[in-house]
Amino acid sequence: MDNKKKPEYETKKLFDTFASRRGHVYPAHEWLANRFPAYVKIMLDLDDEIRKKTRRYDEKMHELFHIVALAVKGSNPHNQQHLKAHLKKGLKLGLHPEEIAEALMVCVNPGGAMVLTYSVTCMLEAIEELKTEGWKEPS
Image (cartoon, rainbow, N blue to C red; front, side, top):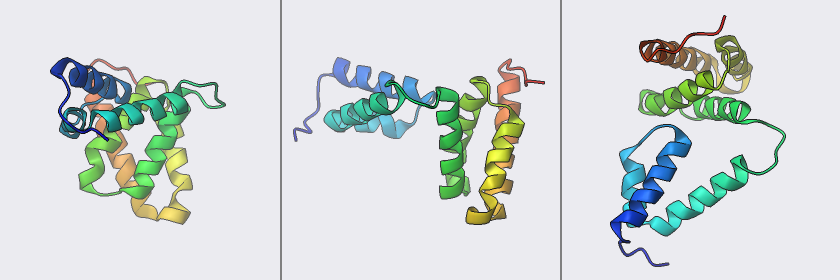
């Protein structure tokens, strides 16, 4: 595989696409796009397969799955920004805070109470951040 640096316009397009699909930007995404554009292209193709094809679950549910997976896998401060980014996206897509909390409560038996406490704390922080951006919490 050729990992030589590609022209800047190609890596910028890859990075912009990668960031826009995830709804947030990580410095790691830009670094990967600059150094491993073929790999980032594969990740985008996989994302197309998962999110763009005919499927049973809509994007809102995909975000809920992301939230649950991140909560169970990474209930720690290092994961907080990643989890909050998906919480914000899910809330913007119409997930209700109670729906998120209910899904997280299901995780208590296999993942422990820490998953619920940590993730609901992240959700409350995400809600406050969204409110400062003009988002209105559903009633």
